Amino acid sequence: MFIFTSSSLFAQSFNAQVHAGVYVDLRWTGIDGETELWRQMPNQPAYCSLGVLTGCGYRDTIPFSVCGDTIRYKLNYGSTQSMETAVWFSDAMPPKPTDIRIVTVDSLADSIMVIWYPSESKDVEAYIVCTGSPCVLPDTVYDTRYAIKYDTIPHTFRVFAIDSCGNPSAMSPSCNNILLEVRADSCGGTVTASWNPYLSMPGGISTYKLFYSLTKPYVWRLVDTTVLCSFCFPMPEGVVDSCFFRLSVSSLYDTLCAWSNPVAVSVADTSNSVCSGGHPRSDEGVGSLFALPNAIIFNQPPNDKFQPCPSGVLPQGVTGYRLDIYCRTGRRVFRSENPSEAFVGRRNSIELQGGAYVYLIFYSIDGEQYVKKGQLLLLK
Image 1 (tube, one colour):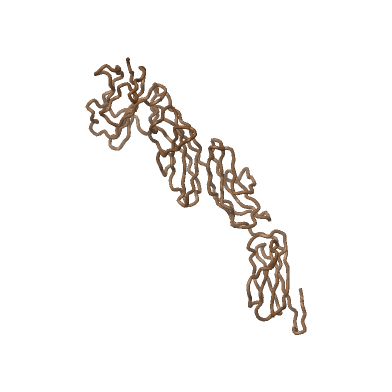
Image 2 (cartoon, one colour):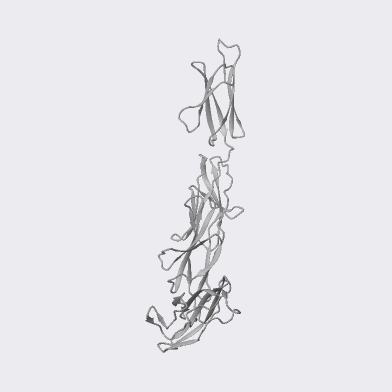
């Protein structure tokens, strides 16, 4: 646009040019002194001031994407004079990336839920969620959460934003659901839990927490915390035939907490089995440290009790003693950490049926944990 005035010996001009689809270069000539630059975006009803300027040019970085639409500029100078120009703008600036906030298993909906932070860019049209790396099975989402049906495979997710011009943001770091696996060993006295590492928790991972529930609907109780991805522990107190386990992982950054799938574990029949290896270790090769009759007679002293330490005192060098006794169905009927306490064929003062039972003796020598297992016959 060119304007001639009687007081000017040269043309005045006001031009705008788009560069790299990111910013607009504005230039004007024939104007002395201060000017005030105004801009009107396509979604704005009026001009907004960009400030008072003293030069003859200005680079306007577009604050958010405008795809294939017109941006208008107005330059005020003197007391009442102004010039206007307009530019057709096609955005090439990608939106700001997002990060996955959490990937958690929703046990009620039987699904894996992915939740991410919204992009800070104002013109995001949608988000693309990918499973795996590289990106496969992309899905378009118009919210900041996504769910797929739960299955027994750990899934890795990545998310990126798409703006109104189709520009993609950078991909988020990978994040995955936790797949928990739990098994009771073949003697029913210990439990081993393991899981895949949780990736990209915002702020870093604080601890993993393992919970158990004796009932369903669940009432979760803490077993223990760890920074590892597996550990072994005694079967929780109160377990009769089965138990449920679930793992959570918390963030160092805030109160975020991701949950694994719940796992049901049955206490196996242990009457004719051998403990699986691992933790604690079988005591084969350690030697005979305890008095272990293979049968007791109910209510017939002195043959009516099973007491591995007849004197009531642990053998020299032995620590951390515990005696567990199970019936053939795997139900625990007796537990004691007192070496002077004997099993006499009762469970909480209730007389037990005659038949075969399994005993487990947990103990430590020089910090190394062992388990002694065997079969006991209760005669009547």
